[in-house]
Length: 132
Image 1 (cartoon, rainbow, N blue to C red):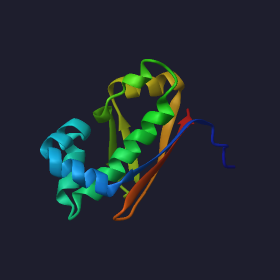
Image 2: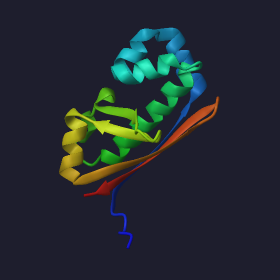
Image 3: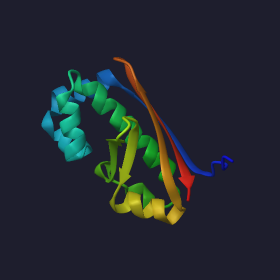
């Protein structure tokens, strides 16, 4: 028997790759340091087109941020407190720390479901927070 999904938060975001490429061209490595964790940065910089991979991670982070909202404290979640990782099977996954992890515990989040898609033009992410 399959249990029902108990969604307690949903977030979606779309990021234009050209906008991210322009920011990287203008700000350089500072963008990576401010927005990405060390592992995210290493992954994006290893790809032939880093801007596409940065864009999809920013979309995912913003989607998670939106799904976690609801309190003044949640508005203070930082970019690097939401890390986009890859599960052993290759699917995208999320690791939360700091205020983001605290907010997830407060909401009773058992799992963060994440779907990503991107082209050379845009990146999109959809997040569903599932209750424990």
